Amino acid sequence: MSTSSRLVACVVAVAVVAAAGAPSAPAQSRPLVVGSSATYPPFAYENPQKQIVGFDVDIIKAIAAKTGVQVRIVNTPFVGIFASLNNGDIDLIVSGVTINERRKQSYDFTAPYFEARQLIAVPAGSAVTTLQGLNGKKVAVVTGSTADDIASRAFGKTSGNIRRFDTTPLIISELLSGGVDAAIGDNGVIAYRVQEHKGLKTVNDPALAKDYFGIAVKKGNTALRDTLNKGLAAIIADGTYAKLYRTWFKAEPPVLPTQ
Image (spheres, helix red, strand yellow):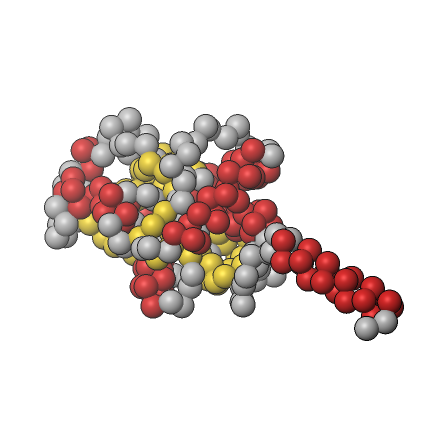
């Protein structure tokens, strides 16, 4: 072998070794499909250009940028969003999903990304001040939501006074039309909707426990969960999370638990 041939062989060998030792980007054959119900402002909704925007959307895009993965947001009705995850139609859910023990039996969750509580919307002239004050009254909730769980425990799952709908706009519409006496839902969404209607007000019952939203993945998909957790920790640490929170909620973000 000539001197020049030996030199070329050495260069190639060094390049191969260097490439083998270099950190590789996350392997991804396709974008991760993110299910989000785009009827949930300010968390996720369609703008006039039919783009899905909102706090949830910005959060998952920021996490994706930090972890080097690609994501594709798909408008998925909340009533069927967990079935879509189970069927493999979507890879994860970012849609104001409350972390609770029942759901944790079937799905894995990231660390919390939003501090939530349930809020009650009633007509401005209503005398209701607590959840129990709704006993015997008609209450609207989104099917399968935390509000549905709370109303079911308080008034009985089969109670005819619990009216279930597919989206938050529908429960607010039913309240405005007089079809129900109250609507219950997540604080960010209910407050946002009530601001749009002067004839409504919110009732904050301190007895309703504080909850947290998390990103849901299939049970056992710890690799994806851990990747998302790393991205979430990174955007909290560098101030991106706080910036997004202030943009959407006009307030300072709370300190979130790490898990």
